[in-house]
Image (cartoon, rainbow, N blue to C red; front, top):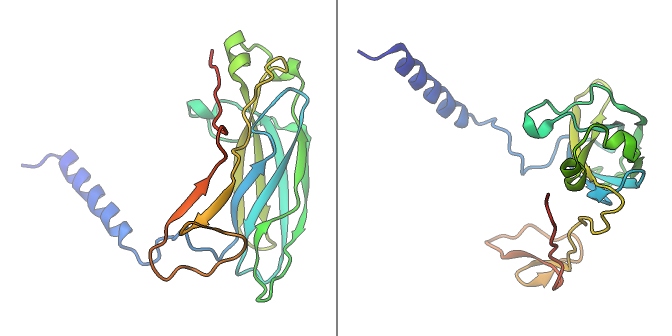
Length: 217
């Protein structure tokens, strides 16, 4: 006789398989509805008091050039890496921003691309490194930046990213990767290209010596 655990386990597997076969399962590679594709940070690692600029990249193909509302807030990482929910229970008041983004309409009233940037100043060293060990300070403390977009009477989309803050005495800091070109079938992409009709070779090339080394305490 099967145990109750075996029956429940089998039922769970069947439910998962059934869900995977649903025709309306989201296709995250397909653009259409309001999306945050990424938020690019000018400095993935910074010193206390540094000003960092962030550039969101949005997609709203079905939006007909509508106005999008945004809000920003930041805080010292409460412990996302150890399972704490990514949220600012006590946001940095100096980081809080809000406004609207008017998506520039294309020839077919669609848009995917970068929107207006915003800047945040990292907390001072006393705030950032309070009660932190020497190892924590050397390796860096994460500052979380939350970016939310929404539309009137519609959904909202949330995102967050980390900026690692290390002491100013640490002069060699992590930088964004340098990219020489993005190629399709060994030809650099210089603008919008049509969707390939068959298999294509895609690669990103970087300059020699662009790989970074770092130390960890």
